Amino acid sequence: MKKRLKFPRFKNEDEERKFWSKLDTSEYFEPKDFERVSFPNLKPTSSPISIRIPNYLLNRVKEKANEINVPYQSLIKEYIKAGVFRR
Image (cartoon, rainbow, N blue to C red):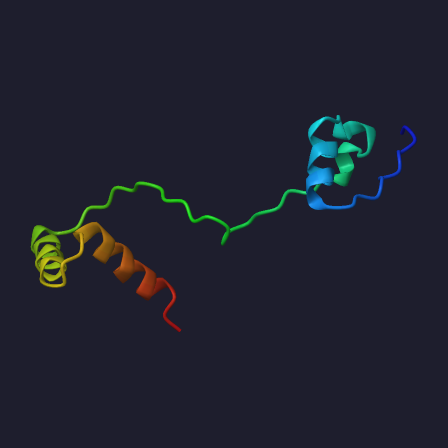
């Protein structure tokens, strides 16, 4: 294990950003110092899925979506969301 360097004090965020952009972080951190994190609410991402539903049900969803003037895929997404987060 090598000796860790001390962090300098920064006047503002721009100064800190500049400092870290030109530096190899391995001089300041060991791999074991890092921890995997998740930011689930930062920027939602979508994944395409394939599901099989009866034609009559898909047609009804499309009719309903047309009535309220939204894409049927968005309506399906809202139905799934409502079902998942129902308490």
